[in-house]
Length: 344
Ligand code: L14
Image (cartoon, rainbow, N blue to C red; front, top):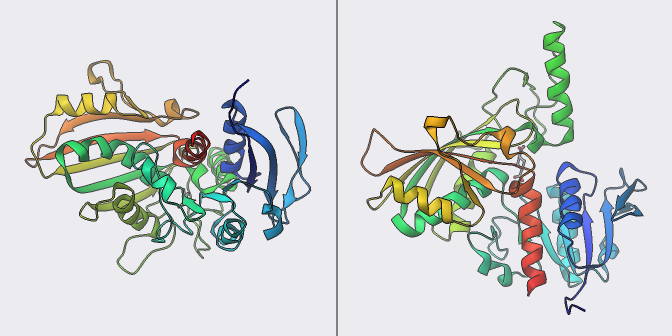
């Protein structure tokens, strides 16, 4: 008999693209569960789902839903988290929040377990899960920052449509068929964020994810700048990002330029990354091996390759970072945090 404590869990946003992955991970990793409840907006309440061979009815999330819950995983959008996570926290629940609602709140830790696991215990009822593009990047930056000290990062992302939810996946497939059938594409979903103009995603690349801020960067890009500093615990790391949506279903790719304060060695970089937690090094140009979104889909790791010294400067490195945006970028990072809490 194990002495493992069993937890009362709530999954908020159970029917969403991330919620689905959270549920799968809780099942396959056999998370120590006493009771579990599945919550959603009124729209999805009443739907049924199967978890470990039992059928559950999804309930509408209200403040009282959280009585008796110990850990709640939120992925029902920022507006739901803003209202319900503080209510849950008041009731003694530890909330792991997948939205951007609390990430930059100074009282809320922003955690990637490979980078700053010690922050988990510093919570005041809410732990924020970072933005997907930021998460996979900091997993790779951490061992390099510890060794050589990072001065600045210039990153361009190639982001999968699944980040924008199930409707964006459907839209991409629909548009692709429309192009092949030579009928009007009629863009309807991307970019997301309540924007008036929609663009074609099929056979295209859209350099806008979320709204624009006043400095010409989008919110998605500024998340990479601000969240990287907070997770790495170092305000001196500068990040300039260009975030691009591409017609890939699962897996964000990133072209990352890193400039160090100290001298570095490329072979040592490869071995630091190969030995770092959560990273799989895929870097064998002679055999045309490098990370691909299609290979990363469904896997928990962050894949790094195309590692080379930058030819334009002294202390610059280029690399290619790929990970499943719904897993390490969202559901897996959240479940990992829950597992740390369960381990005590
Ligand atoms: O910050 O649209 O959690 O791909 C994650 C999905 C931001 C937008 C976040 C997307 C969102 C992103």
